[in-house]
Length: 606
Image 1: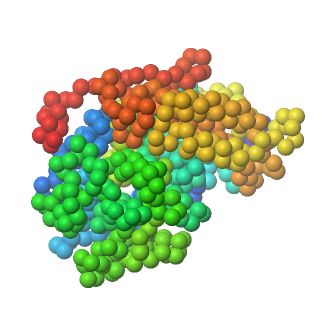
Image 2 (image 1 turned 90 degrees about the vertical axis):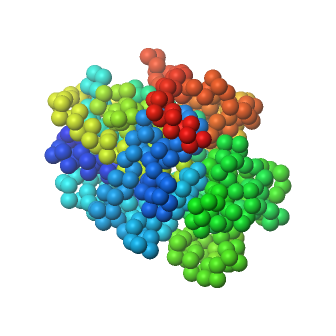
C-alpha cells in the first residue's frame, strides 16, 4: 500500500460550489472543524455559470410578490411532484439568504432608489431574480469565498473522492486522491455533506463543465442512500449551436427575460402557437403585451418565451424536426430586435448582458446587438438526486447530507430558472447547520482498514494489465456513452429506445471494466476519465431505468409513447436504491398530502 495522507474533521463537505461553500460556512460557524474538497480549483465551480439571477420574493420591483406566490410558482413548475416542505422552506427563506449575501459583500444591480434589482424569468409570475448583470453565479461564488476564507475552513483543491466509508450504518469518512500527483487521501469525518452538482457530462451536448460526472449521486448510491426523480433531466432550451467547438454552451434565460424572442428560419415567432393550458391565463398572446411585460408593466402577461424550460425545449425540437431550423440546426434567439422599441438598445444590451455579448463576439463572431443568435436545447440540470429530509437535508444514510443540485425534492419534475441559486443558499445553510449538529451529538466513527485498501485497489485498477496491452480507451468509452444517452434517453423518449439504452449501458460497463490508463499517476487525464466512467455509467443507468418506470409525460420527462399526464404517476416519485444483492432497484414512493394551508395557497394562485 502506498502512503495515505490522512485528515480528520467534524464535518467534511464534498464540492465547493454555492451549496458546498454555504454549508461549510454554516458548519464552521458552529465552532467545528470543517474540510472542503473540490474536484477542480477553488472558484471554478459550475455555480459561476449560473448567469440569470437568484429567485427570491424580495418584492423590490413588484410589491405583489411574496413567498406564497413563489411557492405556488415552484410547485406549478415542478408539476406538483415537488417535496412541498422543501418548496415552502425555500420560498420563505430565500429573501433572507439574499440579504445575507448582500451583507457579506455581494454587489447586486440596483433599482433607482437603491434596492436590489430583480428581473423577469421563465415560470415566475413577477420579476423575482436578484442579479448582477448576467454574472450572478460568479458574484455569489466570489462573495461566499471571501466570507468563508475567514472561517478557518481547510480546502483541498483538485481532489476527487472516489468512495464513502461507513461504520456500520453511518458514514465515517471518504477516500480519494490528489488529481495533480495521484496521491491518496483519507478523510475521517463525523458527518459528510455532498454538494457535487449534476450529471451533464453523461450527455454529448451539455452546458455543464467537465466536473459534472455525477460523483455525489454515485457515491451516495454506493453508500446505500436512496435517490429520487432521476428521470427528470432538464434540457435548457438555449445553448449555442455554432460553431461546433462551443456547442451546448449556455445562453442565459436573461436574454429572454430582457426581451429576446425565438424565431424559426421563416422569421416566425413560433412560441405563440403552443401555450399550455396551465399557463394560458398568464401568457401574452401578442407581441405588444409581451413587450410591456418585459418592461415592467404590472398589468401585462409574460411573453411565451418565458414559459418553463421543458416546454420551450420541446417547441424548439418540434421546429427543427419539421424542417424550420436555422442553418446550423437550431432556431434564432433575437435580442437585437428591441432596437425598434428603444433608441439606446445597444447600450442596454451591453450593460445588462455583458457576458453574452462577449461570449458570442469572441466564440462565434456575432454581435448580439445587431444580429440573432443560433440556439438549441442543451443538457443543463438534474432535478433528481439524493433523497433528503426536507428540514435537515440528511439522506437515508445517517450522517450523510446533500444540498444543491445533487439533492432531490425541491424542483419536482422541472426547475424554474433562478431557483437553483436560492436552492444553494437555503439548503446549503440547512445542510451545514444540521450536519454540524449531528457531528456534535455523535462521536467519531471507525474506519475499517480493509475498506481503505479496497478503495485504493479500485482506484489503481486502470493501471493493471488485463491481457490486452492496449486495453480500452476511457475517452472513447465516455464519448460512446454520451452519444448513446443523447440519442436514446434525451429530450423525447420511447420505451424501445430506452430499453436499447439499458442494453447498451451493460456493454459499455463491460468495456469500462477493461479501460487502461497509460503512464503514471501524475498529471494523467486518462486515469481521471477512467474513474469518472464508473459514476457516469451509474447515473446513466438510474436515468434510463427511472424514465422507463415513469409511463407518462410530465415536466422535463417527455415520453412520445405516453404523451399525457397520468393520475397514478402524478402521485408518486420514482426511487432508486441498491438492493441487498447489489443490484439497482426501482420503486415508487407515494407523494405526501399537501398541508391544508399550502393547498389553499396553491388553489388561490391558480
